[in-house]
Structures are given as C-alpha cells and as structure tokens.
Length: 75
Image 1 (cartoon, rainbow, N blue to C red):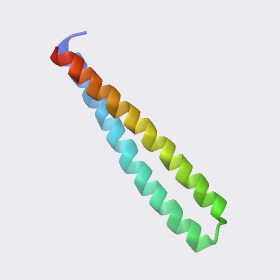
Image 2 (image 1 turned 180 degrees about the vertical axis):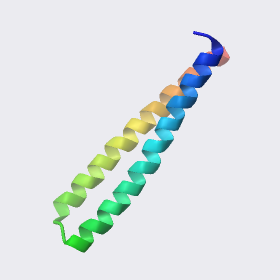
Image 3 (image 1 turned 135 degrees about the horizontal axis):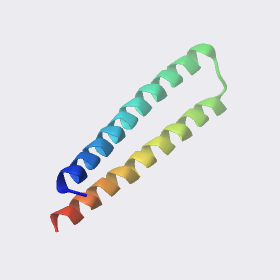
Image 4 (image 1 turned 45 degrees about the horizontal axis):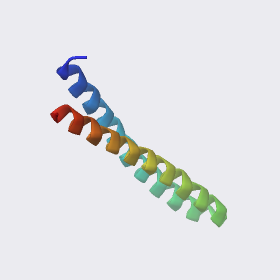
C-alpha cells in the first residue's frame, strides 16, 4: 500500500470513529429522555447505558489502533 492509501484509510477510520462517538451520545441521550417520558423501568436504562459503553469502548480501541498505526508510520 502506498503512503497516500494508508493516510486515506486512517482518515476514513477516524471519521467512522467520530460518527460512532457522536451518534452514540446523541442516541443515548434521546433514549434516556424518551425512557423517562414513557416510564420505562430502570433495567432498560441500564441496557441503554451498557450499549453506549460498548460502542464507546469499540471507539476507544479503534482510536488506539489509529494512534499505533501513525506511530509505526513515523518510523
């Protein structure tokens, strides 16, 4: 792979991670507000929290992978 391709792949992965983070937070906030309005039990709030944590952990792992790839690219 050329250096340009690697940069494009890392940029694409970074954009994906940023969309996942922003989307996760927005969806999590919306679900919490809607859950309170509808009167869902607390176990659903816990489910929403765990799903958000899973998405954010996925994002953190990918951020680490991007960082390591950039460090290796520097030489």
